[in-house]
Image (cartoon, rainbow, N blue to C red; front, top):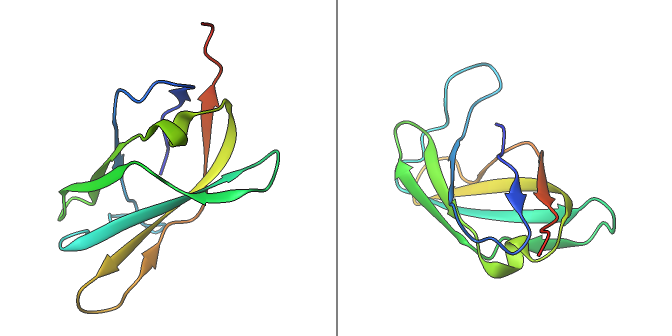
Length: 107
């Protein structure tokens, strides 16, 4: 799963993410609740993603990350991991950590 870079201070545009399985295919997110964590690679500090994580195509494994101001407050490189919790069946599911960059804003 690749994540698009963001710019510090910019809460738009939202990011559409497809949860891909290692061997191919996608993770079904039907009836899942998504949460996530960010770890700053320079400080090691971990925090919860503050923005909304909304499933947009459950069968297709697609969800949207609407950034909160805190998610993009500072430039840096972060490790990101998402968790899907389901009402029934095997739960939770977690992604491998993925690197994400928040670029510096010039003004």
